[in-house]
Length: 128
Image 1 (cartoon, rainbow, N blue to C red):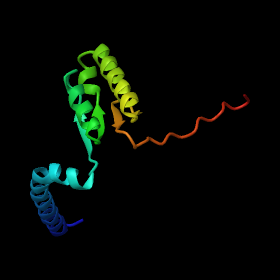
Image 2: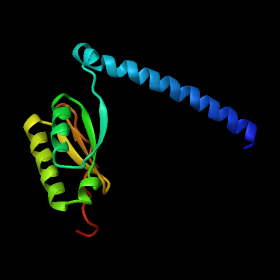
Image 3: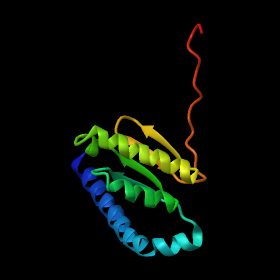
């Protein structure tokens, strides 16, 4: 790709992301109003840096939002704290009728009531 095309592409991305930032500012101001009238569900991501962050996740899920939680920052500090955090989140999903699942090695998705995570059916071992 030549330099001219890259420059044009860069300008286009700049305009797109500038508009996106402006719309996010408006969205942040009105998200509570929208939630009250339209039952908007947000998909939010949060790094788990301490056990205190679990309360933020719980509050968001109880509000009806889906959370993708990156547990690796806390895991670098304490595996025991990660176990406590995941156990608390499992208890929360049981309490509210939500769902929880691992997304790879570093993330967990926590869903509120009414949202279930599709899981591929377990296959029987070959020959058994």
